Each structure stands twice: as C-alpha cells, then as structure tokens.
Length: 471
Image 1 (tube, rainbow, N blue to C red):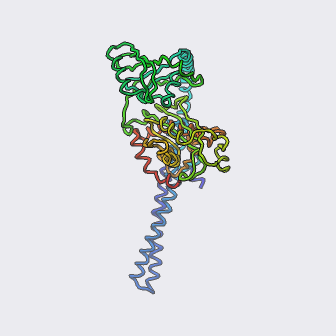
Image 2 (cartoon, rainbow, N blue to C red):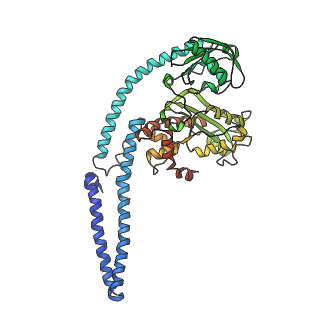
C-alpha cells in the first residue's frame, strides 16, 4: 500500500475507475461461464437468467466496495482537509492531518504549506495587534479607574435605546431591577412611557435635562439626568443618587463596546446577521440525567455580544434542588448537599437566567437536555422559554460533518479551546468553553455562507438526528 501514497491524485482516481471497469468485465464473464454451465442441465433460458442475476448482484457488491474505498481514502480526507483549513483560517486552530490525507497526492502537502504560511502571517499580525491591545488595555484601565471614582452611575445608550456602556455604580443600580447587560434595552430597566417622555424633552431641547424620581419597571425611583451626545449619536444617562443606595462592585469592570453605537433595535432576530446577535451561552449541572425527575444544582451562563464574550456578565449560581444529590452525581460536578443549602431554588434561579437572556439567543451544548429542565419549571418561574436556540453539537456537525465526534471535549480540542481540568463539568466552566467555541464557529459559519440566525437554524435541523441519538 505504500506505493499508493506516491501516486498522484488523478492517477489514483483513474485506478479506482479502471479497477471498477476491469472487475465488472471479469464478474460478467464469470457469471456467463457459470450460467453457460448451468444451461446444460436447466436449459439455456434458465442459464442466462441465472447469469444476469449473478452479474447484477456482483456489480452491486463491487460498486459498494469501490464506493467504500473512495469514501474512506478520498472523500472523507478531502472533507477533513477542508474543515481543518477553515478551522485554521477562521478559528486559529487545527492543522493538516497528513496521515489521514496520505492518498490525496500533493494536495495535503500543498494545504499544509498554505496553512503554515497563513499561520506565520497571522503571528506577524498578532504581534502588531498585541502591541495595540496593550495600549488599549491601558486606556481601558484608566477609563475604569476614572469612572469608578465618580460617585454617580453612568450609562451610555445608543440612538436605538440600547446600552453601550455602564460603570460599576450603574451595574449596582441596574442589578436592583434586572441583570446588567450590554446591548440590552434601557426599557428593560426604566418604565418605557415615563422614560420616553423624559427622552423627548431632552431631544427637543438638545440640552441636558434632570428628572426627579424616574420610575423603573419594578417601581423603584431614581433622580436621573439625560444628556444628548449629538444628532443620532445616543445619550448619557446619569443616576445621581446611586452612591447613596448601593456600593459599587469594585471587582466588576466598566463594561462597554463602542461598536454598539451603530446598533439598531429589532424584534426580528431570525433575519439578523449572526455576528450582530446577542447570545447567552449556558450550562446546567443536575442531580441526574432524567429531566422529568432530576433537578438542577448549578447554572452557569456567559453573554456574547458582537462575537465577543462580555467580561463580567456571567451567572455562576448554585441551586437548591430540594432533593438529595446522589454521590455519583457529586463525583461528576463536585456539587454536594452542603453546598446548595440556603441557595436559591430553580424558581428564583431560573427566573434570573430568563432575565439575563432577555432579547438574546440561547446557546448550549446538547441544548435539549438543559432546556428540558428549564421548561419543566417554566410555570414555577413565571416565564416562557420562547428564545431562539442554537446547539453547538449541531453547529459542529454543520462545520465538521456528522462522521466526526461532537462531544464538548472533542469540539474544544478541534478548535483549540482549553477547559481547565478543575472547571470541566462545572456549569460556568462548560458555559465559558462553549462560548469560546461559539465565537470561533461564527467566523467558520460565515465562510460556509451561513449568515443569519434563520440560515443557521435551517442547516442545524438537517442534523437533528444527532441530538435524538445523543439523548
């Protein structure tokens, strides 16, 4: 077989078909010979019918065998080569497996050369980016220090009323109403009618306006100032009495993404570009594997905006399952009965996750399993889980093919995502890893021509059988 690895790809494909043709001729000749011998005892007609049937079955078997060899040695290696190059180009991970592509002639070495050159170019660019990133990080640190010392809550909002920036004081204020979230609507926190009236007064005057006791959606009231930034550029919300009501969380960074200044609010998520969506990537740890009787013991979630994980916007919540946690389950995720004592039940934790995911696409690895637990308690939480859902198992199948392994560990290894050993099988650790996987997959989906949420869901449905088998 070693000599086959030295042949060109064109010659190897020619040999496949030559072998098929020669073998077909030999099979027909053998079948006719046997039929001729049979014709002496059973009649000429019977002999020819037997020869025809034997030829048909022989050709079918031969074709199946050739197809298997072609699929194993040509088609699958080409698919793996293509996905490896996409992973390297768009996710910065993976490489060319020359052994798997050993029968593809010069294709594998050529692809490897291109991959190495791409990596070298990427590394050169990365050094430049790293230098600029260091400067931006220093600027961000100065901004964080400056805003943290100002005794007011500051929220930057774009023209579509979506939050672009909030400081540590604002995080404390917003959390009294709903989880602080980048790219969420300001109307998730303030009563829409009252806030719009204040906004219109500011917009018509073009000047900063002060408002006493502006009501939030949960009936809190804050003295608030609205200041326009410029025509079509959004506005700044300052809550003056924030420092009197809550101490800032100094461990939480100032959260911002100025790319959101160009954002446009929309209710039609399905037609939005995948990179423009907000995702909440989550995972649950449970008392067992039966959603109809087991319970959630931990919820982890991470938010992804504009294809980037948002620092500080996480959920890492233990949940009281109100039943005993089996030792076998504790051995997997490390959560025991003592740890969940006094923690919120799923009624509270599920509602918090729902608020955290408002207006976002839910993402999980094997989402039907996790969603079954959440939907079972939807009425208790007073929520409806109507979010669009993406499953990284199915996205992996789209990108890498159904014949590959699609466990979280396998996908992470394929995309160069590392899960620290102490965080594997913890809700937040697995959610963080899945979020990193998602960010890399978004670029790869784009390279496959899958641009919108509707397109991604439509492609994912073609591989739904994977989840049915998994569960």
